[in-house]
Every structure is written in structure tokens, then in C-alpha cells.
Length: 87
Length: 197
Image 1 (tube, chains in turn red, green):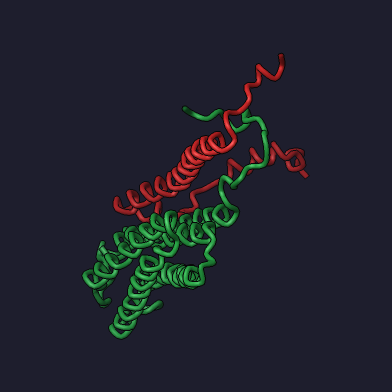
Image 2 (cartoon, rainbow over the protein chains, first blue to last red; image 1 turned 60 degrees about the vertical axis):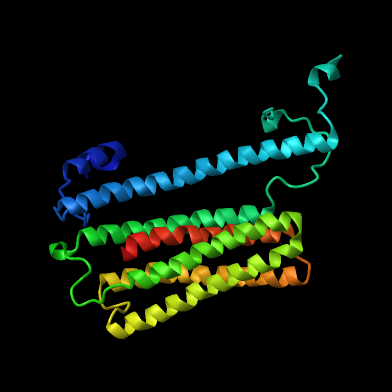
């Protein structure tokens, strides 16, 4: 057995030289400009929708916390200052 | 005055109300996953549409989708969202006054689902089926998924209405049902724009 066959990194390098175009992507292999644009905008869409949802949630959560905190202060009174506790 | 970060808030006593009720948080997480589900379907539909042979879409031999009738249904669905929003506003002041707007929202939602069903029956009769073409497959997959969500949300709204009639509706239950209904209402215009127009 060749020496590079038992070494993972060397084996990987050898396998990389054996690559060839697979044309497995139905969009890339189609060749039409409309397909390419559909691929680009749907990729952007699928990327930004979850990001917008996550950031939107944290923005809403922060607003809600501020409202909740203000309400807690009204009910319980102002929070004790940490500097006063040490003296 | 802006509040300090949560990590610097000294613990004085147990909070009197949760920041986000568990039911609402669970529903939000579910809605996020369903948004990605529909986003994947829409993306696949857009790519298939762009790859249509000869650029012809809809495929030849398939019936035209009922854009105008569905536009009316869309208006009914959006109105039901507005009615539920109004119900939420009056619920916080007097829960009993929320009965009528919730009933209006429920009836408009039922109108939407019922007439969408009639349109489906008409389209199937005209030859657009799940296996007739790519348009048929995607149409029933995307719009059918939305219909299932709408039916489930209508059941939730029905439960809310019954609880309101019994004067046993908890605010978190109402809020949870609203989150789901706003998702169903909010995603529909996007589906209408992508699939029908």
C-alpha cells in the first residue's frame, strides 16, 4: 500500500487532484440567466430571513425588558444603588 | 430612562409577571421554524419557475390561477388580522368587549379557508392537480401547507372565543393564539405574491 494512503492529510491532497466537474447543481448546470438570478436572490432571501428574525426578536425582547423593568420600578420603587450597599 | 443590562439588575424579589410567558415563547420558536419552512418552499418554487422550459410559466395546458377571487380572500384574511389586533386592544381594558372582534376575526378566517377550498375544487376540476405539473405540485404544497396552518389557527381562535364566553380566558392564552394568527395572516400576502401573481 502506498505510504500516502495511510496518512489522512496526504490522502486528502491526492483525492483533491482527482476531482472533476460533477454538474450536480440543477441551477448552475442550466445555463440560463433567469436561473442564475433566481439562485442568487433565493440564496440572499434564505440568508437574511433568519438573520432578520433573530435580530428582530432581540430588538423586541430588549424593548419588552425595558418596559417590564420600568413597570417593576413603579411597583417596587427605585432599585437600591450598589454603591450604597458597600458603605 | 433606559434600563441597565439584565446582568446588572439586582435581584430584589420574585418578578410579579414573566417577561415572556412560556407559551408565547414556544409559539414564537414554532413560528420561526415555520417561516423558514415557507421560505424554503418559496425559494424552490422561484428556482423551478426560472428554469421553466422556454421560459413559459405557467406550464402550457394548466388553468390560470384565480387571482381576483383570491385577492378578495386575501382582503378577508387581512381584515381578520386587523379585527384580532383590535380585540387585543380592547381586551386589555375590558375582556368582555373583545368577544365581538374575536368572533369577527374567526368568521373572516373561516370565510377565507372555505372559499379557498372552493377555489381548489374548481382548479382540480379544471385539471390542476398535485401531479399534473410543477405548478400543481408547488401550488398545492405551498398553499396547502398554509391552509393546514390556517385551520389549526382557526381552531385556536375558536378555543379563545369559547374561553372568552366563559370568562376564563388567560392573557397568555390570548397572546399565544394571536402570535400564530398574525403569522398565518402575515405570510399569506407573500405566498399570494409569489404563487398567484
